[in-house]
Image (cartoon, rainbow, N blue to C red):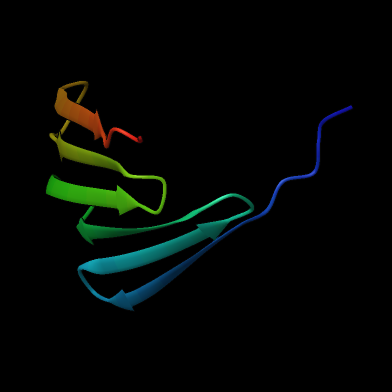
Length: 66
């Protein structure tokens, strides 16, 4: 049996999306193709570039906590 999950995504502007789930929230700037940047409330930032086909780039950094 799968656990129950919650996730809701809102498109605020054509290039800005806000996503809320059970543990955090995030905002993403960009579209489906080309570069986009995501930052979440846990301190993780992701820079991605999706290209047509199986190609793409992704870099993720997590803020250090004290």
